[in-house]
Length: 220
DNA sequence: GCGACAG
DNA sequence: ATCTTGTCGC
View (spheres, rainbow, N blue to C red):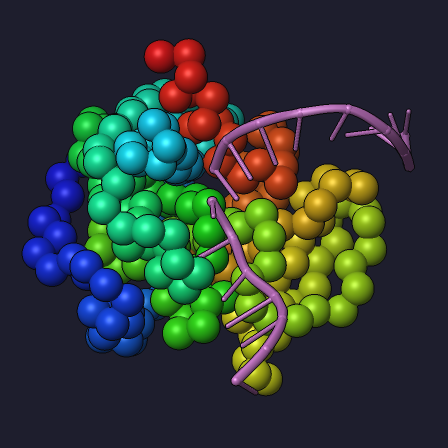
C-alpha cells in the first residue's frame, strides 16, 4: 500500500509532544469505515539488544480470518521507549512493513493504546491519522484510566475513565484470561471497535492481540 | 516532590 | 519489550 512520507519525525520528547498536540484534533471518533473485507494486525519486536526494530503485519480476510498476506520490516531503532511516546519508537518500522503490502487493509488492530493516552493520542491514533485509515488500539495492559471490577467471563467489559472522560474500555476476550484494553484509534466508534475486537479474537486468542504477526516473523 | 508508566 | 520457575483452572 502507498504510504505518505513522514516528513517531520520527533527526535526528542519535546518535539514529540508538539506533534501529538498538533495531530490529536484530527482523530475521528465516529464510524467512517468501509465494508471491512481485510483486517490487519501489527506487532513490533526487537533484536540485537534493541538495536533493531522489527514490525510484522498480518492481513486477514474478514470475517473468515484467513491469512491472505503478510509483511515484515527490520530497521534500526531510532527512538527509545518512553511511556506516552511509544508511537515514535514503533511507527517507522510499522510503516515500512505496511508499504510492502499489496492489499490496503480496511481496519488495523494496533498493539498499544489509542485515545486511552495522557494527551489522547496513543499509537493507534497516530498510525490511523498518518494513514487516514480506521485503527483500534488493543493494549495488553493498563496505561491510564480507571474502571470498575471486571467479571471473569468472556464478553464482560467496563468503561475506562480518565478525568471524567471515557477513553476506552476493558474487555474480557476469554473467560479467566487477563483483560485487554480497547480504545479508539481513528475513524471508528468505541462500540464498533469492541465488536470488531471480539470478532477478530475468536480465532486468534488473546491477551496476545496481534500475535499472528508475531508468529509470522519467526517462521519466515 | 513522589510515584506510575502502552511496548 | 524480554527472561523464567512455579501455580492455577478446566
